[in-house]
Amino acid sequence: MERRKFTRSLTTSLGALSLTNGFGQSILSSQNKKLGIALVGLGNYATRQLAPALLTTKLCELKAIVTGTPSKAKQWKKNHDLKDHQIYDYDNFDTIVNNEEIDIVYVVLPNNMHKDFTIRAFKAGKHVICEKPMAMNAQEAAEMVAAAKEANRELFVGYRLHYEPHHRESIRLCREEAFGKIKFFEGGFGFRIGNPNQWRLKKAYGGGALMDVGIYVIQAARYTIEKEPIAVTASGFKTDLVKFKEVDELITWQMEFPNGVVANCTTSFSASTNHLYVAAENGFIRISPAYGYGGLGGHTRKYKFDFPQVNQQALHMDGISDHLVNGVSHLNTDGEEGLKDMKIIDAIFTSVEHEGKRILV
Image (cartoon, rainbow, N blue to C red):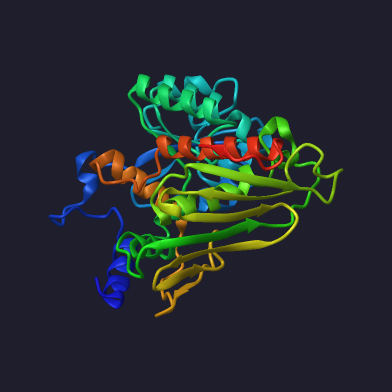
């Protein structure tokens, strides 16, 4: 598709995502209601990103919260007009099985709690969106995928960028080999982390730069190259042995893909980096900033991206709801995708522990 025409088409489709089917009928007509979402964990992401996004979604809405903090429950109840039966804590969470308003449980907890609450949600008969990374390791991720199949429910991961137009354009260009075959990928995501007491700096909670933000770079390499890595080689570096006593501070790694394609990647909790770069035979694609909630920008050797800034979380949750209601593609955000990332993360950690040993994936 010609670039300018594609831009207009993508912008229009994103703006009207999940509103009508191919016959101009409302896709909500199949059940005449929005899907109900329960947010489990009311930290920064749930409060500042997901809750505001749910005020704009077309196919889903906030129907319950789960928190262990009574003061948060009281404030959310007031701010979001929730009723007593829509407020849960971690002890009575399993009683959501009796709440027919809830279709999807969105797990927004520290990484070490993902598996437990995901499986409990499946046992309650609910679908699950689990924030990334979906688990502490590949073994846990595999158990979560198996639990979804056993419960006949669906598992999704919070891969919001699959719905973001700059990334959609990059994926399209790579799929169509607009600049020839891909030869090389380079990307990084990192920032200077603040509060030294937060859970992201605790090993038991699944903290560290790779788990928190490095996973975005793994994702970007995989969905632009459109192949799975066959081996990884990684090294870890620390400049603050106190702050980063338990978790990784900075990791660089290389992923080898079939046909000789290579991805060089970086993640850090002590330095800022935020980009992806795809080099092909006859051109390149660059997004920078690449992974934030907004302000993304990009260009190729031929043109600058002119896409609007969108609410990534709203598009993501509406896209999943569209899939559940109508079978529309969820843009590769399911549990199997999350499991693949966890296998790569496990291999990176293994390589770091063995001082850069090449690890097969």
